[in-house]
Image 1 (tube, one colour):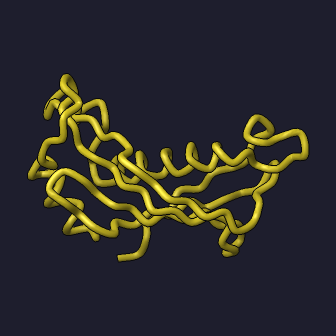
Image 2 (cartoon, rainbow, N blue to C red):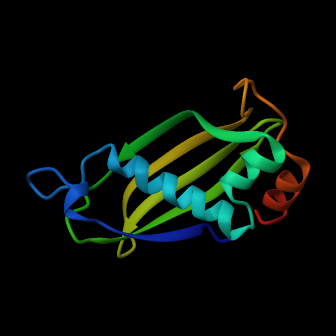
Length: 134
């Protein structure tokens, strides 16, 4: 399956004094793309919490910065499912500008109980849909 892509424009607030995207803001861009990936499959994070009693938290990530992004750039943030476990997903994510790779990352997200924050199984309907769409 083709990776899911979400367009992002770099705003002034995303940059440092030199007009370069501040490193932690790439994580925000990737978070938005993962949220929109879930939404595109019909899952809202608020609904996951209300109906399934689960939330998704970041377990770990590795990120490689290749080239900088700048104020007013139009970026495309990709995410693709790499692996699915009992209670976690691994996403391959990248950020590009005009087809040029700027950032790549591996993000492991875990499903946890909304009250106890203990790992729980990915709800069956979600696991089925994300597995079929990958």
